[in-house]
Length: 206
Image (cartoon, rainbow, N blue to C red; front, side, top):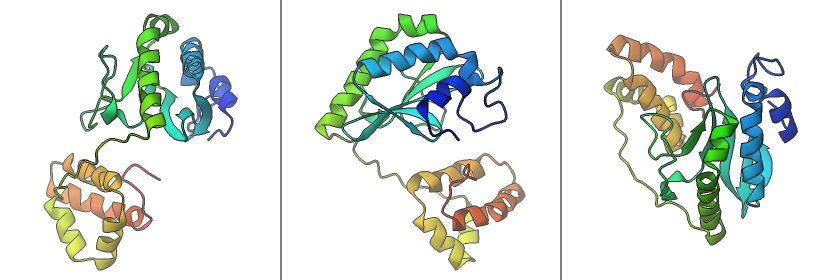
């Protein structure tokens, strides 16, 4: 992955084989990404690189992350549960996303059309960071699939490692297993996941 922010806009994130090729998503959306970057910097955000992507910070807190994909490019907000979004510009990244947290874009023209709304969201998020406001913690009971419960009951080492995972990582396994229709498929996945759980990783981390 890249470690210098300019590399993202010139070559991409470095996470796939399309890095630094004409087919790289960051190059495909270069004009739109340039405008989005301009807006983020214009409101006083500090530009850094995290997870191979441009990350914008204020008051020592992550505010938003720029990403480029095959079909669009996005500005994704941290602590999205706080956002009021009066313009209704934020979308959920997926059905399992708790709150609308991203602005999806498909061209430089669209960025310019949405500039006022984008800037408003950024300033709102900056305000929360500067005031030290965080979302209220949502304590949700995680319902584990029966096959996972059985696996944890029969494997104390696995049970201990699973309990030590962050709630988000635990949830990633529950979501993955719930997508399997057959019990035998869930059992097979749990077996494959064992080493990953012991390493403290989520279902999609390698």
